[in-house]
Length: 112
Length: 117
Image 1 (cartoon, rainbow over the protein chains, first blue to last red):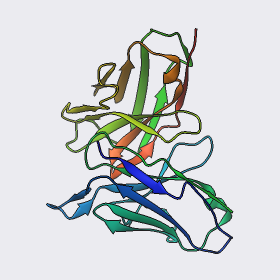
Image 2 (image 1 turned 180 degrees about the horizontal axis):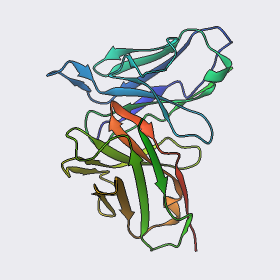
Image 3 (image 1 turned 60 degrees about the vertical axis):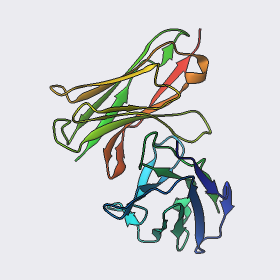
Image 4 (image 1 turned 45 degrees about the vertical axis):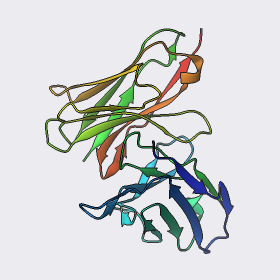
């Protein structure tokens, strides 16, 4: 199994400031035949299912604000929120979908 | 647009079999490349991937739950069924199905299942 580890577990950022969340996989999740990293980022608010923000490590899902961006390749990845808004308070998860089981990281709680 | 609705019993007794249904629209599981995944999430915990069924009946299961899970599909009704045998109070969670497109891009609203005698 591929283990996903996020850091930090929680993060407090002021409104308008940058938030950075890291995710590390125990094995490379780069599929060389198509040069895609099989890494997704989700946002989850209480009482709601996870919402896909980023796939292929850096491609924003339709409708996701451009303050959200993903970067990294291989085993190390980052989600950046460039200017934190009040509605961004949530728990954020990374997930690999390179090989089953499609494990998630433990989550990062983002607060203001 | 793609929508999914996960449903099932709210209360199940230990040792019983849990059956969950995912009714979906906006895509077909007869189309190559399509899939539906199942997840669960205990309160305060990260989501846990359980299973995935593809259009070609290629099924994948969580290794830790493989012996207890069966996923199947009914193409005529656009439904996916997840069965979990011999449930335990530790299986208490919200269960979700999701469309397997660009990772998991559309999710059901979740079905809260409590396992208790």
